[in-house]
Structures are given as C-alpha cells and as structure tokens.
Length: 273
Image (cartoon, rainbow, N blue to C red; front, top):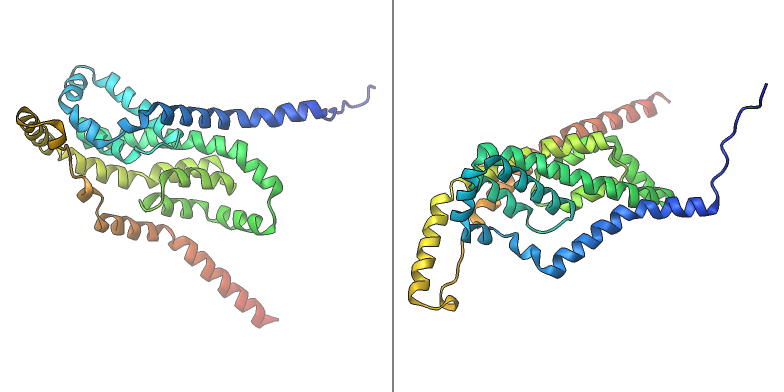
C-alpha cells in the first residue's frame, strides 16, 4: 500500500507569485482610475453634460433602446467599480432619459454589479492582508460588524450621507461575506435609486426650457455671458436625506434588540451566580 500523498509546501517563489497575483486587480483598477482622471473623462459625468445633449441622446434612445440600456448600465458599472464621482448624476440621467420605470431597475442592477466588483477586489487584495496583520482592536471590530452585517450595511446603503465608494470598500476590510454584501447592497439602494430616478423623470420640460433659453442667449451674447445651469439641488434636499436616515434607523432595530437581549441575559446570569 502506497503512503498517503502529502501536499508539498509552497516554495518562497510560489508564495511571492501568489501574493503579487492578488494585487493585480487592484493595481488595474488604480491604473484605470488614473487614466480616467488624466484624460479628463470624469468631467463628462455631470447632469449638465447630459442636459446639454438631451435632445440628441433622447433621439438615439428612441431608435436604440436596448443598446442604450446596455451602454448606460456598462457606464454605470465602470463608474462605480472605479469609484469615480458621478454616480448620482448618472442615476438622475437614468430617470431623465429612460423614465423611472426603466431607469430605477437598471440603475439598481448596474450599481450592485459595480459595487460587487470593487468589493471583491478590495476583499482579495486588502481584506486578506488586513486580516493577517490586524491587531485585537481591529479583529474585535470585524467580529462585531460581521455579527450584524446585514443590518449595518442596510443602514449605510439607505442613508445617502455615506459616500457610496466607502460603503463598497469598508465591508471588504471588515470580512463581510459576498452573499450578505450583495443582498444588502441590492435592497439598500432600491429606495434611493427609485426616488432620485422618479424625481429626475419629471425634469424633461425643465431641461428643454433651459436648453431653449440658453440657445436664445447664445444667439445674442457670447458664451461667457450665457452660463448653463440646471438646478438639481432640490432633488437631494435635507428633507429627503432625513427621510432615508429614518428608514435606515429601522434597519438597525434588530441590532439594538439583539444587544438589549444580550445585556438582559448577562444581568440575569450575574444575578444567578
């Protein structure tokens, strides 16, 4: 009978190669981000740019709806995966150009895909390294977050005050599993995406009026004297943020109940001693 086979330990060269391989996706993301900013492409990710080209984009969408949806989702995935500024502008553009009935669902799906890409890259490149080198304090924080990861993530997703890219990366560093991240991200961004898409879907006439007034101004004056501006500040008002914050607090109720029960059980145990 032949002795059971044993896996040979990795050589230092193999370990080094494996370690470097983990960093390739993160380096690729950083290189892509640097390219976008160096070329100035991020400057086109504004609601103003969409408004200036509103008629042309709408005409293209009417003739190429499926392709336009795929292009929008692809662009949204890239923006989120590269953590570029402009996700809110794209969400508004989705509602404006496709209507909220189409804009909201495709935004939710695209945002979830993009967030998952950067989450997995951060988890592989940074999360494992942090876990290996983390001290007791970080490990305690990781354990506490993982115990109620769904509730914490839902809260962070529901409240627009937290930057989207931070909420994509932080769970990866805190050891959240992929299923929890996917579920919380998908469910958590539905209210905000729907609300902003619906609000933007009502701006078609505002954009058309702004474009007409701007064109009339340019016919009489120079471009310097004809600033182009579409006020979207009312779409992200303090009242809306507070409303989402209230919904987010509801997501934390299970955490509070769990901690109160744990404290009560601890007190009962101490009394019985």
